[in-house]
Figure 1 (cartoon, chains in turn red, orange):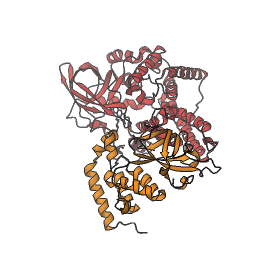
Figure 2 (tube, chains in turn red, yellow):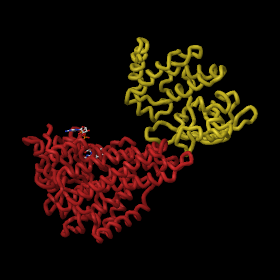
Figure 3 (tube, chains in turn red, purple):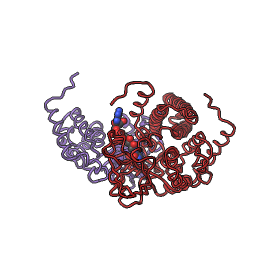
Figure 4 (cartoon, helix red, strand yellow):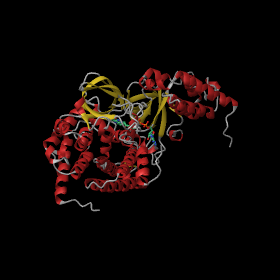
Length: 395
Length: 228
Ligand SMILES: Cc1cc2nc3c(=O)[nH]c(=O)nc-3n(C[C@H](O)[C@H](O)[C@H](O)COP(=O)(O)OP(=O)(O)OC[C@H]3O[C@@H](n4cnc5c(N)ncnc54)[C@H](O)[C@@H]3O)c2cc1C
């Protein structure tokens, strides 16, 4: 194992950090995390603008095959996510760039790739994920939204839920049931793409606990989608979703965001005096910050190991689960520590009373997202138990 | 230690639970957060529970009050109940003159006055006496208060604010702090709700030369910290 970067990697990584720092100058006030992109018009415009800035530099295609305009390696994409994470810069669509593009590369027909990859590369088309349903979350294969073939269209009916950014996204990738009679629930599911402006789609806000508009319920009533828009084979959509496990899942973006938070906290503790002494001299605070710093470096080392293994196609299925659990829970702990150190001010939202534009209050509330979205930590622990430790599989 | 409830306490618990379940179901809790008139009224009927009977209260014990608070917590009842009763009424019971008790306790018991307490000031993070710098100056019939308090619970709906102010600079910061019962409608008093994670109506209260009658000094001059 060798974490030493080549000179070229060091140069490129620095370039990513420099550009992200500069993009950060245009950031709307109070823009924080995932909510930043989706909650306000201003934030969404900024997201689109950053996407164009990255596209200009061909950075939305890092690790893609050359024939589709790709450049660089998966490792380069990891470095970019470190930079966007550290400066909290949007623009790399988590659905289009991070999830759909690699899915298409791995499983889609040439025609689909030629049709849908260019607008992801150019940062023009933003995507949302319509997978979860009221009765299908962890047990995603239980999904029931149906798609019935009529001529050269599918007609889709059903309800999706928790769909991040569906009120802003241009297009959706969805999972629908095309064979209700399949012998296993994983069979008979199809992966399909459609325009969010298609008639029959109703998007209703589901407010996040802090009141922000992050995710939605999406109702599909007789939505007609060209049959050619499926990815992979009809009824084989579950296999398509399984390829996601092999994508960049090092969590390095989230980890770099935590490095930033830690730096903010440390400088706050150095600068803030209570009873004549800087907080940094309070032994309780020092010890808790030091503990979080140790955990953070452990998470960082784990993430680099996984990114390295992944770029050589040597990643085991449970490796990414381990780093997701560890860094997700660390994020929650660190945001809480931030709120505690700020004392009563830790609970104040972005306003003239809040320190750091309400940064820690927001992070605290968003820190739960990683532990639920994309497979809850309980599910990740099950995966580690089955595949990693060889414990019996529970039904 | 006997931590079982008496029959009377069990009855109190049940009637509080039934009342709250009917009057303030979970759906109402969210509505109340946005409804200033609504949350200001929440729990008013119970204000007198632990106030002595001679001041129009029901004369029950502090333990009875904790049973009620537990039920209110169980129901997530928003509102100024605890700051009025636990902070306001008890401070007056402990430190108030007979005249103050006669004036304010029946109002609280009858649900006619909401109280809160103003301690923390901008920049302060500990609830300690050194953080009290809002100045109260003796000006004949009145003390005049000047300064800013933050995180004052429910000040936006309060009728009275018990304010900890500095009346004398002493080497020991606990000396020289006095408490004042300030009419929330006083001239020069400005209140703004701070947005917080729990939407719990913590307020910034600015005192711009607010005149408080001397009769509203709560407890002994310069010796208020013990009550805090
Ligand atoms: C911020 C956020 C954004 C999201 N964005 C999207 C999106 O864009 N598109 C989309 O399709 N979905 C999205 N989701 C949905 C997300 O994928 C689901 O919430 C997640 O898969 C969990 O499903 P559920 O909410 O139905 O919980 P459930 O599956 O009902 O789980 C409830 C609890 O039971 C536990 N549990 C369930 N099964 C097991 C088991 N076998 N063993 C042990 N414990 C178990 C879970 O860990 C959890 O604690 C988002 C969720 C969040 C929080």
